[in-house]
Length: 112
Image (cartoon, rainbow, N blue to C red; front, side):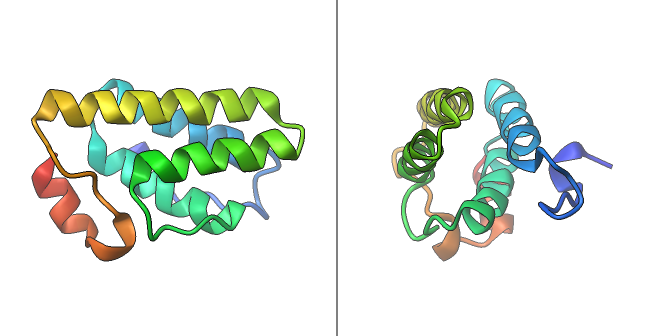
């Protein structure tokens, strides 16, 4: 089973956001856009960030939320993931920036 599809909940994992960001960073480094989008969806719910925007912008908003809550290390990590995600989009030749709430995961997988 791929780590991207593991179910991690904030109630069962004390440092759930840190772990989910680490998985997203790993997937972004590997160019697995579908994995990043899956983690992004989970993080949006946990951090109460809207998923009605492009993933890169949403990750940057998460960084702001984390920074305001004093979790500066996680804020930097979310910002770096946004950079990696954008780099993976450019490398894949994708011109449009996916918005997960309007795009089923199956379409995201096909694009990656």
